[in-house]
Image (spheres, one colour):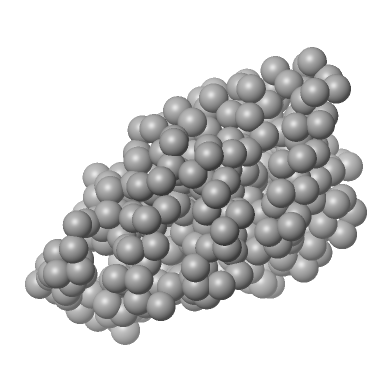
Length: 352
C-alpha cells in the first residue's frame, strides 16, 4: 500500500535498478519524467516499454508537458506555446486539438499522464512561477480552455491532471523556493481561485499547491491540510478523482518537514498519490515511513488503503500503450497534422 501511493523521479537517462525492481513488484506506483531522462523519442519509448512490460500492476508514467517554458520533451514532439497564447486566441477547438495531438504523442511513447492543464488564474503580475502558464486572468476563460485542453489530452490517450489546487496564481513567491501564503477571504477564493477547479471536478486527477490559504488553514499548505483536501475538495466541491501532491522536495514543504514526515501528513490530509521527483533515497524513506505508520495506526492504515485503491484504479484505467516500433513512432510524431498544427500555433504566438 505504501508503494502504491508514491511516484518517483530518477536522476539519469535510465532508472536505477531499485526503481525498476519496485515498479516490477508493484511496490511503486510509477515514475515522473524530466528532460534528464530523455535522449530521444525512441529511447523513451524503449525505456517505458521495458519498464511497463515487467510490472505486475499498470504503472503511472507521468510528465510535465504544458507548453511554453514547462516542456520536458522537445522536437520532434509537438511544440506548444505558453497556454496564455491559446487563451488569448480564444479558439476552444484549437486548444482541444493541441491537447489531442499532444496526448497522442505522449501515449505513443508510453506516457500515461500529463500534469496539465494549469488551472491557476494569473491575477498577480509579480507571480514568479505561473504567469503565462495560465490560460487567462479571467477564471471563466481558464476553466473553458483548461477543460478543452484536458478533453483533448484524454481523447488522445493520455490522462489529464489539473493543477495547482486551490490556486497558485496570485502568489508572489515560487513554492519551489519558499512557502507562499494567501490571505484572501472565502468570497474572493470562491470567485477567482476556486472557479476553474469547481468546473473541473470531472477530471481524473488534480494536483495540490504548496500554498497556505489562511481562510481554510493558517498553519499548513494545501498539500498537507485536511481542511483543504478533505473538507474543501472532497466534501464541498465533490471531487472524486485522484488527489496528487506536488513534489514533496520543493522548499515550500521540505524546509519545515522531512519527506517521510510530509508523505505521512499528505496521506493523512487526503492526498492519494505523492511525488518525490529526484531524491531516490527520500522516495524509499517515505515508503518506509508510510508503511511504519500504517502498521502502528489503524486509522492511518485505512486512509492509506483508500489512497492505494484510488491510485490502482486510475492506473488500471489507462495502462501504458507505447507504439510497437520506432518507425510507427516517427510517423506519428512527424505527421502532417502535427506539423500543420505547429505552424498554426506558431503563427498564433507571433500574433499575440
